[in-house]
Length: 263
Image (cartoon, rainbow, N blue to C red; front, side, top):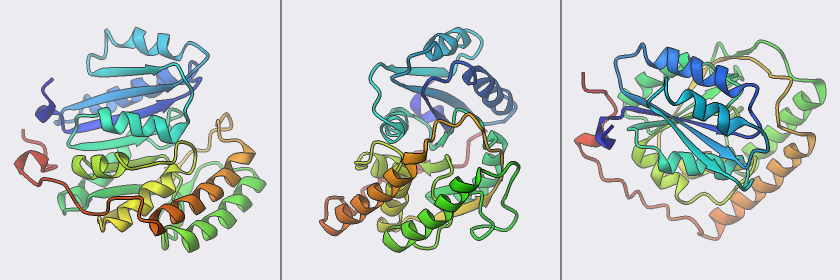
């Protein structure tokens, strides 16, 4: 499919997802195949040790717009999302978690923001960001406490005014994705903070949609990851202060950048 024909790219970072990835891909395909716009699904494997790649390969015959990037070395979620977003060809580029905790149908709520000129649209589980945000199964108590404390720290240091920086369902116009992800330096869990801090520094308009979120008890996010995010948030502030990012908007606005699909 020619690059200019793709409206939506969905990037799925995956690490040891042999048991869950087929269900997630099938859900993405089932929903997107019913839409009027063109799409691609890109699964990026982050050095998995199981049969994730084999499962994805087995689906390519029935889902022709499914792409696989099978990297053998584990580099982290931030690196993996970056790789997928820069390899994507869509006018809108969305990344979503392999556990399907945020359903792809929520993309319909993002589209009006893009049609109004927003460059970035994110989802939230926190009603402070957007009324109606809820969680089906709350996280364990220590994750809730760490999440609240950590978010306050993130707001003070890097991304003021956003209460849920970490939910893995974020979308970008093509030029914004390329401008942001070509510069990101955080390879692991703190990459969401860096992405949003860069979007703010570049003065992109950020829309927020509420979601009904399902907590997965088999999440790969470990206890120490929370502290890693805080340390990486400090690094993002340092990078901004030292001028390590190019904050000039370099996108070339042209008709092929427009987000509304041509039917």
